[in-house]
Amino acid sequence: MEISWVFIVFGSWLLALAFVLKIFNHPKRKLPPGPKPWPIIGNLNLLGSLPHVSFHHLSQKYGDLMLLKFGSKPVLVASSPEMAKEILKTHDAIFASRPELAAGKYTSYNYSDMAWAPYGAYWRQARKIYLTEIFSPKRLDSFEYIRVEEGQTLISRLFPLSGKPVLLKDHLPQFTLRTISRLVMSDKYYSSDASSIITLETLQQMLDEWFILGGVINIGDWIPWLSNKETNRRDYVPKDMVDTLLHLADDPNLEVKLKSDRLMGLIHDLIAGGTDTSAATIEWAFQELLRQPNIMDKAHQELDRAIGKERWVEEEDFSKLPYIDAIIKETFRLHPLCALLPPHYSIEDCNVAGYDIPKGTIVYVNAWSLGRNSKYWDRAEEFIPERFIENNIDIKGQNFALLPFGSGRRRCPGYSLGMKLVRTTMANLLHGFNWKLAGDMRPEDISMEEIYGLTTHPKKPISVIMEPRLPFHLY
Image (cartoon, rainbow, N blue to C red; front, side, top):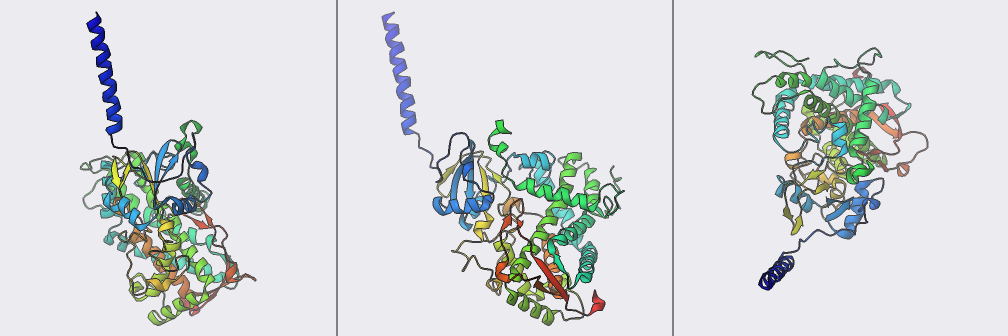
């Protein structure tokens, strides 16, 4: 009995020693710097009404790769082009998924759209459909007549308002929604008639709410306890993007079947993705141009020289308009489509820039900070389109100081359609009208405050006066 007790005591001592040695010999994880979290809430107390601005100021203290805690969950914030490249290129496959946040669950059919779907077979299939069937150059070219018609409709609606104060925010969202809706649904599912399935105004309200809910930091995510198809014919020609998806849903060769929720999620992406973003970009551009009328004068000179005053700008003209292209790029820099790129999610442990990042970390890339990085941008807070003249800076995701459409596997697949809409609309609004501030407002009085959501908008839209600058018969 005494010998047995000796073995038990000795064995227990050995186990304890092994445990202690394991603790001391196991290399401690090197985590990125960040503020000390509070119990229960973590660092949620540090977020203001504009999370991207809060992140930006925190990064000035803690660095370009910063670790926060939202509740008990780790949140990594990348605030420089170098760190964005680490997340979106070097370790793209590891961070290619999405976290299961309330925004994706309740606004995107339980993560069934491409924006919120987790990385996997369904997401890869959806992206392939978008790139090869929906946003292919041939498909987009076939819909150019819709973009031309709706652009002319916008001009025709603004023309009678010449000389009167108007708010662009009252016209741009409706224009982009009408255009995208016709591309996606051929005008078949809504109209201005109250007897239709849904009115344009109701659809616009739904999308406005979706963009707000899709971007908010929802406390329940971090502290849980507080919270008819077409027949399959070989000669079938889809009339719009919905027809294309419905046609593909019957394809027996699809790896993942497109059931109703997934179809609705993909259709929802198509409508929402190009509507608010395009309108917001144009609205921000005019906020900036009206602060600096000399920039608008240069744009008018370029249009008069390259296009003349006897016709409107067409999509094929844009190679002749480098200064207007520079205005759009500068708008993307200071007012990115998404101030915070949609969150990424690590699917395994990895090492980023010498720091250990555990599996299950939620990652935000602060595009708003990237555009204000003084290491990459001279006079970073100023609106200077000339910085892009004779400087062909990529906007498709290869230059990590400017990421209007994201980068890597999760880059927006519809960027080419978005650029077509923004470029021709912006160019024709400038070509067709002279613009000035209404009333006694001065350029220096224009506010650049933001309203935060999945996209950011001017908090105080400005009232403007338009005067035609082309022959009246063109309107």
